[in-house]
Length: 227
Image (cartoon, rainbow, N blue to C red; front, side, top):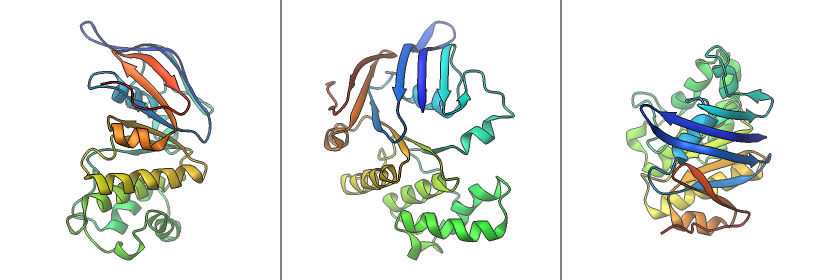
């Protein structure tokens, strides 16, 4: 499903974010990418959804070699990948329904399909009864659920969650992780980028640890080992 082969990413003049990374993620896996600030984990996530391109090496996602993907092909490729960020990125003047439907509108989906899909994904994230509310009327955890719903509208094969619990308290953070586990059980590959030790340790799933841009540990049912 996902394969990084000898991938390096450099920024001028002489900074390396990733160095000779080799990583294989199987379809349907739930994997945590962990590491301290500056370890390269966010860069790895950006490479995965083609926000950045590798300086060296090869990245294959499904049938796509995205190592040198063209700007023309990126929108089509990204429909296979849902992305969730720490800061929600919701449109404050749009309702929950409108925030989620907007992702379909910009892709050219017709209104009939939008009216079918949006209620389905809102049900998955447990927000069917709040479709008419605005972001300011929601808790942080609910806002993140809207963000997750939006990421699911194209039925992605992969969900990349980059610090999705970073702005949440412990209770809401664990609710979001339970939701990601539920999505994973549907067959979606989940790549969780996080620094939250408690969450990683509670998952008891595969953990890849980065340090100074390198993979230093890859454990099938691991824990966050760095201090």
